[in-house]
Image (tube, rainbow, N blue to C red; front, side, top):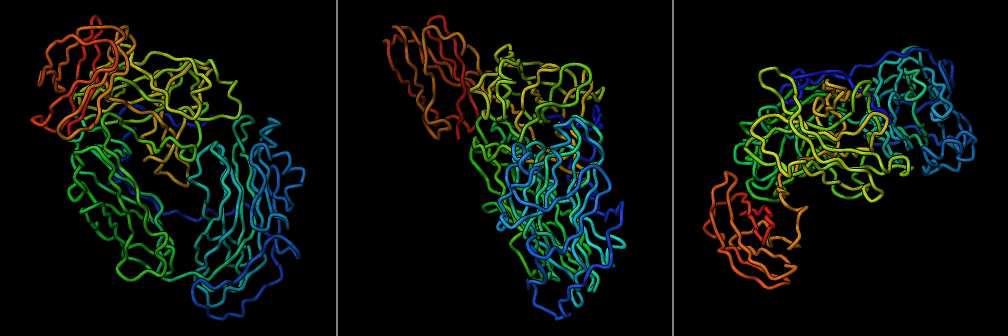
Length: 618
């Protein structure tokens, strides 16, 4: 389903994408467009000071109803169960609510009904609590169970009023990181907010959709249950997002090919966090990975504001130069002890691979698929969407790997043609220009939920240092569902609208991140792999290797075989003389003890077949 995009071209799209250069804004309270009812019975907590974490108020939408529902647009919140007609009609898109006390009732909004009917108007509806006395309480932790599925233009808010609903001084968008058109989320949300010891506190949950697009406005729906309010803390921070950056453009990667590590430089780090306590904090970013242990400069962050911290390239981690996974542990630390530390840290993997270059986080499992770009805005020309890569060393690209997402109705997409495209940034004009493309392919049933390897038309293409776009492309009216997995800095997920480069728009609540499409480069050569008449099963093991490896192959008939090993500059570093081999499985040992660590090509000549593949010396 369509994801809106913002037009931007050339170098301008890279401005501010590096987190080290961004000015991360503080989230401001959004004023309410309508007033909630006043005069609701006050529920006292008697003003007793409690230790942080004590339960102050709760409701599970059963029994006496302490909530007021208000609407100023299309549709309204409803209190009901999974048997309610509007929940039944939305079950296809959202699924049933599965909270702890769902059988007793919950509150929900059905946005899918308007999408299905093709009659979408702006929506603004809320469900507001009774007045709650927070005398003596500075901050609270609000938890609730929810079911939610994201679409294009819907935003879900939790808001707070300190004056019985006359004004709403705190507004926090929740579900901002939920991928568009991904799976439904059944989870518990915890949100910290200031209440300022007011005796007239109120909370409300608000659904807003400002679009009137009948095809792509509104959303699926939102269910809320089991609301609980606990006393908050004075010294508390929460880690929101983490970034690792490589190269001059400080782009973020999840997989990095070994051939590019030598001149990529140090890996720098950044993070966004929120001060969710009522005291100001002097916070820093602390990153560890093996022997690496670094802390960035401290920033002073007032209560209940979002800020960014970083470790710049000079103090960053040296790029690993061997194939393997490095785990980076990000932690937000403060000058004094913090009351809660469970949400202050996160560990993120970074993998050096023999040949794969990736931004996304897809690991081959369904759980790592966050959703799909089934369509994107392209009023003119054939659409394409992908991501930016910086190439540091001369290399050969053998394929563009495209993740195809799972969809509800596969038959609607089977047979559609798609391909991979490469665009390169022209340093003089500042525009991305067509560079090369893969052979096209018709989408098959076996492709859904997998990565499809799109081999280049000329088997391999040579690329030099610079910025490149790896794009999944299809044809107008026949788009394929491109998988996305994980998040990336805003400005790095790009596409084409005719001849124009377009940037995927970030959500207003998370302006610095966007979804990451599964579109990768593979630096492995595929020369000759489609023309194997005399030989099959060519592989090297171990690969990567330390001192020696074996080249295995299976001859279909007796043949003369020779093997030549070259470095990436094409220089011959080893030759296995031509010899006669019998039909069947064969192995040839390669003594690489004298070779320097790096990537090499081995070319196997069998009769009329010439096949080139790669090996990696640790």
